[in-house]
Length: 242
Image 1 (cartoon, rainbow, N blue to C red):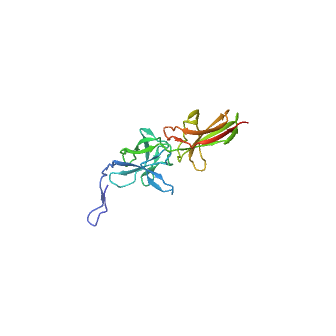
Image 2: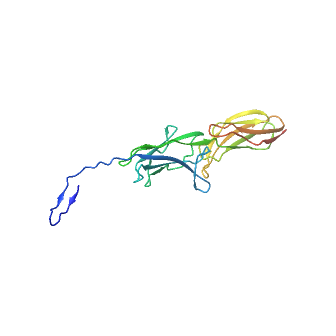
Image 3: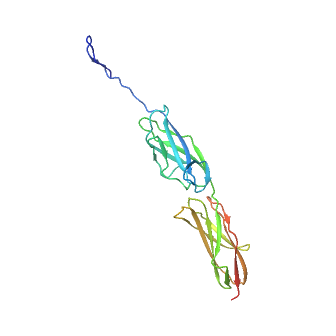
């Protein structure tokens, strides 16, 4: 609507209203990933071992480049919705996962960001972006409750599977070997260190020894879908006659 104030010759006047419809513009969505290095700084992420901290990010802009989008983004991983969705856009039109995700399974992850749209920006879907998670390495150690026992005694063998992973603990089994002979297959019990957040697992086997001499033991962790296997150094137990 236009208003004319008038002058000494012409009186004031006002036009009829003219409706104008403003339609929401097309949105553009981009997906990126980042992690945190040992110094606590954000770094670009494209591949890493299981348990790596991964953040998902979506950037939403309009085709005109004017204005800031509002609303939510839903991330999908190989078609499945990511825990913590939906994620709200901030004042810059960006959406981040609130916390680092450390439980992406080993394999390729095809991430798609889906923007919900608002009154000014249409919904939009990003081109898929991919990162790869590899199996995390492990290190297995073996301890004996005693390195010298009498015949008829029992030695407790404790295998510990250590990782640098912040993900779920290792699963699966440890094979205990006496020399070249497998003497037990024990499932591991996993846990996470409350101070460091690192995952580990333990298996224990009690072996009763009835023959005097010297026995050499090792422990082999066979791995699982997210963790590589590893074998301990040997431990020698001397068995003496009572």
